[in-house]
Length: 323
Ligand SMILES: Nc1nc2c(c(=O)[nH]1)N[C@H]1C(S)=C(S)[C@@H](COP(=O)(O)O)O[C@H]1N2
Ligand SMILES: [Mo]
Image 1: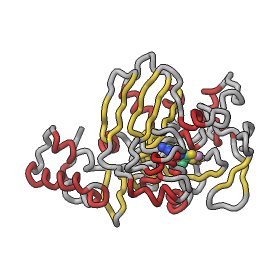
Image 2: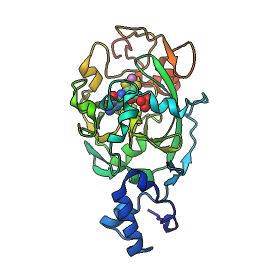
Image 3: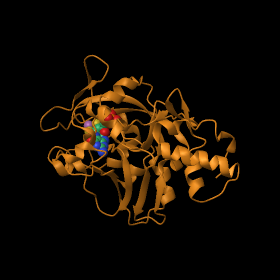
Image 4: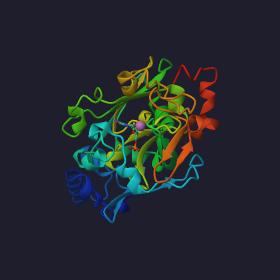
């Protein structure tokens, strides 16, 4: 990896906001090590963050973001809407709770374990991922199973890129994702609202689909806690609950893994959860949705409008059975 030392010292203020300890470690490193790029514990803390993250006006911005042809041209929702109307049961059941409780979540440092049926398992720091891979902006529609929707300008890394680097074996058929399990940081986990930790899963071809994103930011900034910081999945053709937040583990497995909402109520929520206006929730219609920030109701599209990119994965499958 090429390291640009010129960034040292100029844009490190963001540690003040996120993690004092790392900030201090890095300052010490800069003082003592100067420009020498060495491997080892100290440089591990100092290096990965240098080029792609900077602080500006108290905001932690991401840099080097590429635009994507997969983005919708629909106007994104306002930052305020996207970050104050959330589903994140670990931070509370009310739509406003996740924003209120986001401060309890310590999102840096943060590692993700990549393991299971892969040739190259790893434990990787999120900021290293941000440094290592090309970041893309993906403006996607998000359709919640509760029949509301938003348009969100994510910043992330295609999951397929990480999967290729992990080299799954031929036995790997599904990917299993796990959210942080820590009731101290996640007061919702002290309740029985769901079985904790929150888990989700995708079939391998779904995980490899070019639309599937591991988001590390939105609106050009790192993710706020309520949005699933520091790293969450975004699967835009599926109901929102598939887009699991605050991921600590990505495991490659041979059998279809359990997923939180289908375990809680299998009649109401399946493993696939593809957005489908023709399969109603047992307690409400999925034909229309409320677009947050707009008046009136809008029709819901099959695969949330992403059929062109994803329909082929389900040809021959009865979408009423595999809901
Ligand atoms: N760990 C975890 N991930 C989660 C949830 C949750 O409760 N816990 N809620 C899901 C649901 S139901 C939706 S609609 C989306 C909402 O994402 P947003 O709040 O960023 O819009 O996150 C999903 N990811
Ligand atoms: Mo949802």
